[in-house]
Image (cartoon, rainbow, N blue to C red; front, side):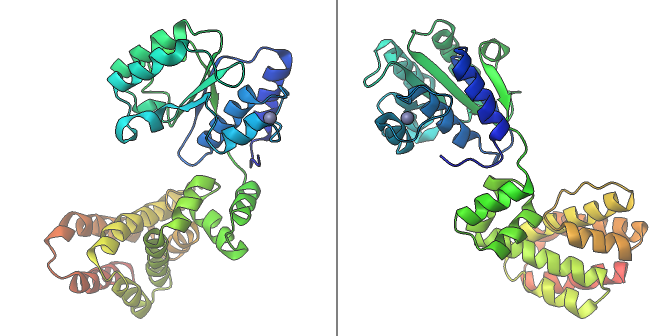
Length: 322
Ligand SMILES: [Zn+2]
């Protein structure tokens, strides 16, 4: 099982396993796209693997079944719920089966993805289950943030924050998943070293298109080129594109202002263009531009004609910036 940028994490799990102190409940916490589900699968395999080493062998029948999500003792709880949302009645029913012995091996692994989406009633039902688990039950949780998880649950699990992934590992992961190198470079430059976010963006044509157009608008403004700016705005040919592009453009302006203030922190994927804007447009004008974009966003639903609105936006911004 190939993992990217998770060496420290797998070493820690191997130490747990080899020392015989493997916690019976582990929670992986971290942003979307940081590989929590992959780590949950890895840990489940570690529990189920017939070789019982520090890493899953990926050769035995248990590893194969876990990989294909057909292991009878690997329970992905969320996918058993109606419409993939935690519901207390179904959850109680499923947890009641926790007393039944494993089918294949010596443990049963319950995976609770997106644990932060469980309401308190569900979490309390779960609490009873993990407080007094049968000897053979193991639990793996994933959560974007632990803020919504009851302290009583947190006190019974070992929480492991997802480590940041390096750009090199992220690029390697994208290329290994079949994305051409030049596109992988573009994605990492645009969306940062977050494998999940990059893959999502690659699979989402509109999102890529919006980023490209916003980059072109920002570049046009930074180069003080009215024609280029207007031409880029004109590519926002429908309301959906426009609704996605304007907030992103606002982020680029704000990133530019933050950069001018001497900080190297970017909220938008158009880092390069934000720096260009910051270098060519005075802070006061960037601020005026940002306010104007905010007004566009607030009023965009009132515009009956998308194309006309784009022409107006382009000319208003050029007036303020150039
Ligand atoms: Zn194995």
